[in-house]
Image (cartoon, rainbow, N blue to C red):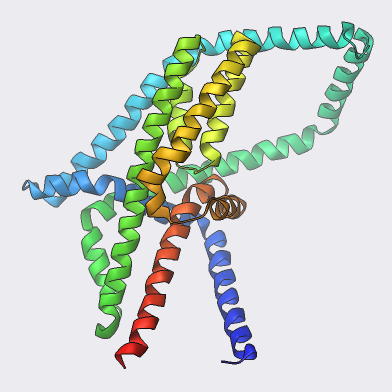
Length: 344
């Protein structure tokens, strides 16, 4: 094959990928809930299938699984909310005291900044706020619009998850039937590979998240750092953002320790977080999730960044497992192309 043929094929593939990304971004209100619903279904389908296997009607099994999942999420919120409301006041007072200490240090410390200078900087910041009030108000309105979109996307995601659980096998059989009989087996195999990858990624990451959250919560309890349960929940969900999520959750924990307990406890908690993340990265991730992903850490960082740029937080969450699915399907297609000439 000549260089020009390779170039044309590369351009066609690049144009197709760009078109898919453009359509996905423009229709993100539909595309993102659809994909997230698939991921949720991969988590909820084992208990739902278990109930179906026990003789429950598919509709009953779906409702039981769906209500149980929502109840579990409500239980988590019920556990977190009292912690936040009871301890946020203490954190706020600690932040206020820390801010006062910083201002005192700026006034009396080696930088030789007078109290009048500090007040002037604060006044300038207030003036800037007043001058940009319209832009800030516009940003608030844009945020309200985004919030409304998020509610609509969440409702659509829940509806789709319900029907995926109830009729997912029928939907997949219909989709496979759209292809010629010669290609149906390949489509079925690729679908199984993708489903297996997504399910194992979600379940494996959940195990890693539970271990991380438990260990960090234990370190916070030993050091007496507040907001233990909320940060443990944040750590658990951070595990679904490989490399970046665990780091950000650890930073939040250390900052809370810094403003509430002081530099020494923050340093100790930071050391504990680093040790826990090393255990996660060197032991848990390779054993539980690493084989499923099959991606280099550099590739993970790049796809997370690209997903965040394209679709924000949901894009960052979906980027790694989707990239892993694409990589595995590409490998399967390459294997087919290698075997086909040998058979002829």
